[in-house]
Image (cartoon, rainbow, N blue to C red; front, side, top):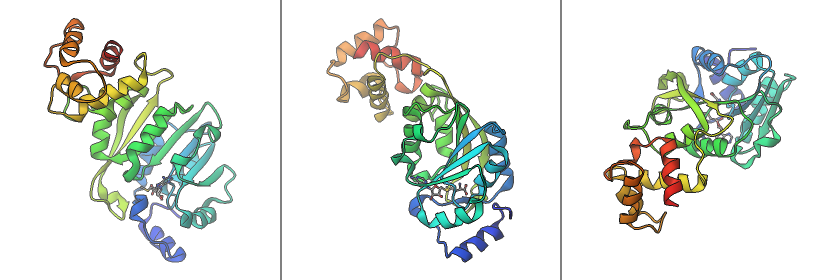
Length: 281
Ligand code: SAM
């Protein structure tokens, strides 16, 4: 089979199927073989791994996933890609294509084994909803390896106290150990997006990192404390509608828990958010 990361092959497929890239579906296709290899290597795939792929596009990643993994189930929203992908991989025994919006699926029905990983060059317009869906769904996935905008990747792996640390970091931290595998310049895609990208690997934890009495309340607190970034935790939370507690009551909780009243939300680890959430709600 032709190398699907080769630009001339991608152009040929476009011409053969009359395919037009759809910005609305975040269609920037990967055309760099080295990056594909980094993703395969970094995600730790081998002949015993079942892979779920979101958004195969023209199959530049799918081609290598099929070579190294036990099975590949690719979920693609764009029905105009079905004939392309069927012609390319329809004869591969370990390939399944699902033409659907990933957010409308129950991944539990697709996950085949305890050795399932998710890999995706994500459509950037719905990165956060997809990550939220994948993590909050508590699916039986060993890892999630995703290409995202570089700026989002930096936020996903940021340590507490750094400028990039925020609500998305807390979500990632709660459910996984994360790291950037490789930075990807925009020139590695066709059409080239406006921003650079990076691949992030999330190793999913068997149990979340913290144990709040209510996850819902903890994430409400996190959201409130990052909503007004330049404010102190106390001002951010007391100005929000997440709790009926007065500012004085919140201050007392902070001080009794050993924190400074001028504490900023971005310095709190996920474990500390859990502790404060239990005391506030
Ligand atoms: N994996 C291919 C590659 O690396 O060249 C394509 C990646 S492209 C950034 C994102 C892909 O996700 C596109 O094929 C797009 O049609 C698909 N997509 C967009 N929204 C989707 C959704 N909600 N569910 C499933 N696939 C989606």
